[in-house]
Image (cartoon, rainbow, N blue to C red; front, side, top):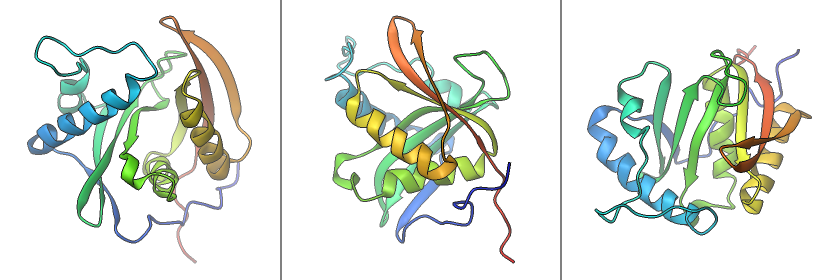
Length: 181
């Protein structure tokens, strides 16, 4: 497979994808609440007794070597986050990269920032990828269809039932970034 044409692309001016460390966990946890709030319109999510949405795997991003948390900034302001993990939740293949969670605040959507961020993540983690999208999230499905296609071309898309939720799975290969010649 030849490297895709997007390997040399960079993030738009002012957009940063920053690896989050333990000290930034509270910031990411707060952004996760906005993400869960957005999702609660489409899936059955309720807040816990403390008034917050739960995300049980959150602490694992600072204790497991196969999980990678990122914060997104636009012109120095927090604008979202990306959680990447290694290990397929569909096939069980430990080598597959998974876009576990991906969130761009509404203020920054429809500007190409999300697609550029996804492409950057895929460049940073070359190998086989799966992006799982809930069938009920029509806008997200359109976003991921266009974003994956613009990065990898035509890809394998399957439909799976994961814990009672129908999902589409986009499977593709990310190449290591090409060096400028």
